[in-house]
Each structure stands twice: as structure tokens, then as C-alpha cells.
Length: 237
Image (cartoon, rainbow, N blue to C red; front, side):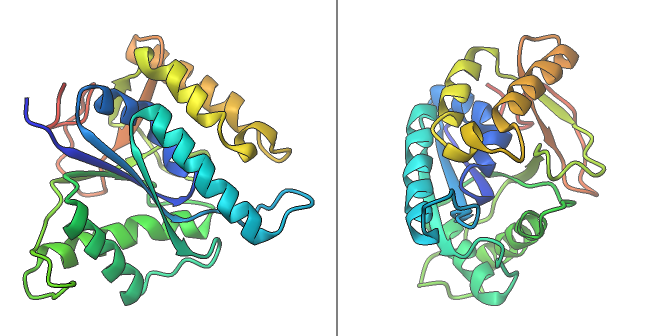
């Protein structure tokens, strides 16, 4: 089995983990490289008594701890929470990361979201994919690199028209997934949304449909050639 690089891209620290952390762990255990790329820290939901900057640093550390549990790496960019832009600077920066780190598969937010940052990320990813792949763009002198596939994953804020195509059995990975989630203060302490309970229940419900104990789902981009399955299509374990 050839090894590949799975990159999970979220708007904020914690997004990629809750959406596809168990999938990440499944592929990391099989020896594949896995990276969580956070475009912002998600620092504006600051706990009482903390500054935005202190909470940004806290979330970056929480992301590193969560990634370590899942067998992955964590990279957090310095864009500001709730101020993300789909502009040439952002696209070029993500495209440069694609050329440097050479991911094969990217998993990111679904296209429709109640959160503006979430909705922008798949657009940034698609534009960066093109820019990284075309030799006519000079990005720090790095050679072109093209992704193989992009998928969307499931987030409670991104559910409009989200109908899963792929159900990945993560029964053996779910305990580690829950441990990784517990590293985040907001997941365990939010008074506005019960993150931990929701994603534990979601894994159970998706597992029922997949005839497994737990599952996480993926969705193809609109217009793609859909092939349903029980693992990342083209990257079966």
C-alpha cells in the first residue's frame, strides 16, 4: 500500500478535529501522513477573564495536543477569526503550503454554512489547488503540486444540503477521537452548544447507518463523479 498525505483544513482550531478527527486517526494508524491546517485559531470566542491573544495561544496548544493524540501534525495560520478573506494573499499562502507539504487528499468544510469563515474555506481550497498545480505561478520557487481529491466533512454549522456520500467506519478510533476533542476548552465548556455530546451522538447515528458502532462521513464537491464507499475513495485501507 502506497503512503499518502491527508490534510484536513478548517477555518478554526477544532473544526477539522470534530469533523474528521476519527478518520484522520484511522489513516494515521495505517501509516499515512496526516496534517490539520487551521486557517485561524478561532480565538474570538474568548472565555471570561481571558484576552483574545491569550485564548489564541491556548487554542493553538490545544490543537497540538489533539493532533498528537490522533497521530497527526497541527499547523495554525495567523489569520483572524471571523475576518477570513478569499483573496489572492490567502489563496497564495495556502497554495504555497500545498507545494511545500504535498498533500494528496484534502478534507474541508461543506460549501454551505451559517458561519462565513466556514463557507469561505472550500473556496480558498479550490483556488489554492489550482494555483499550486499550475506551473505558471511562482510560489517561493517551489515546483507545482496538485491535489488528487477534495472532500467535505460534517459540521453542525454546515448542514444545509449536506447529504453524506461516504461513511467511514471509525469504531476502533472513536475513543482516541473523543480524547482528542476533550483537549479543547470550548468543546467541553461551551454554554451555547454541546459539542462533545453532539459529535459523540453523531458518530453513533452515522455508525447505525453504516452498520458499524461509529462512523464519520464525507461528501463529494458538487459536480464531482460520486462513488459511494466505506473509506476515502481511491485511498482504501
